[in-house]
Image 1 (cartoon, helix red, strand yellow):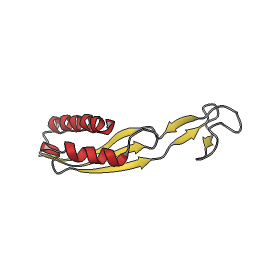
Image 2 (spheres, helix red, strand yellow):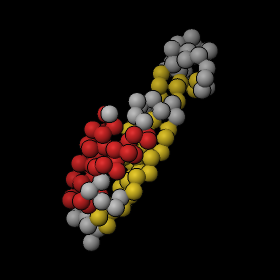
Image 3 (cartoon, helix red, strand yellow):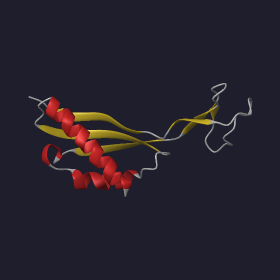
Length: 112
């Protein structure tokens, strides 16, 4: 379950940010997980409940899913979902533009 190691790394980073700002508590985290990232949002959320302690004990996790977006690297034409991953105009293989990310988008914390 690599989701646990990803969550552990995220929690460590959030704790660093909280300490740097002398936060007393973290109330919410927003994370965006791409469909092509190889991360299961449900397992990620489950792992977060195991890692939630200390300053993060009451924190909520908001997981947002982002779909894969493909485009032609030559002409930047978007490739529709479900289509062959090749540009109809240029005959060039498509490139993944987004959808493979795991981003910590927002941290809400109590700061004195």
